[in-house]
Length: 423
Ligand code: GTR
Image (cartoon, rainbow, N blue to C red; front, side, top):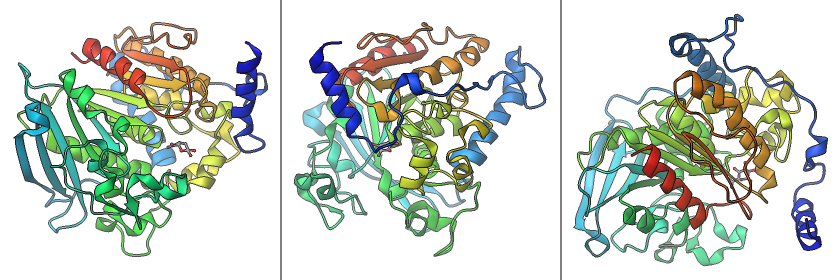
């Protein structure tokens, strides 16, 4: 490592809170639970035992002690096609706006934006990902409705230029966050794209339980029980309601719908994939703590840190493991295994130490035996690959240069892999 890079890494490390474990040599010894041993000690040697016995156990652990249980959709849930333009984006795509009513009333709802490429010979695969600032923020298409709900004040993040005023999206917020779901690139590669604002499902703030989907299930002032859903589970659940619509739309292929998300939305994408096996593939990028990164390593963001900074994200039961990772009856490789045998792409960035890139790789590696048991090639490597050396097996992994986020290089990899693995 040259001097310049060493200094850069030191700068990155210094930017994290004091006391954060950022040195591989200091990772404490830990024992990784075997995903293929049942709670009663029975080893899982056949796919049927995974499906009938072990997967339900692992699912329940992650459900009751990590994300929290979510309810069945309400009777009365329905879809309203609010607009269709078959010549959107200069004729390149069909644009639909669909409102998903989650009860028989007007609220709560999710406004789904869908683009389908026009020049395709069969119904395409679809990438689904939430956005932060409203559907208008991912495209310059003036036909997209402005989001009408609460969004984070970007000024607080030094981004007063993103068109958010008093926590509302204005016209100036159009196309201010295009990278999160790169509509044009995905369409150009023959994919459909669906998105909705995560804040439409549940605004990312501690008083969230009085807002969004929670209002259909909780009374004002009530909070979920310790094993019931937090915000990440609500986002995942909302993605599944988007899928409920998508599988009814004849313009896309219902068997090839991919759950994508970066960071907190990557954690949600994981849980969406676990909740609902109709997702054809899962793409969690830099999902870190509570996502792909093994909690027992305590590297970067820890369980205590995430539960303190974002007390509304996971279920309350998860807070019992603050500073007590070895007591967890699961680790994140088991969350990853809930997607098996469906293709999954776990991606990290070299300088995103907060997300623990090595812990994310080890999470993927820990899920590999389940993928193999279910008859796939799993993860094609057992050593962490070099920067920009993507591994596009069914259980895929890459490490990108640079920091936290998602960029064009990431998306090129995701699409190359999906071309091959999702068809
Ligand atoms: C961080 C959080 C991470 C990750 C990230 C993001 O502040 O600690 O777990 O979710 O936010 O979503 O960008």
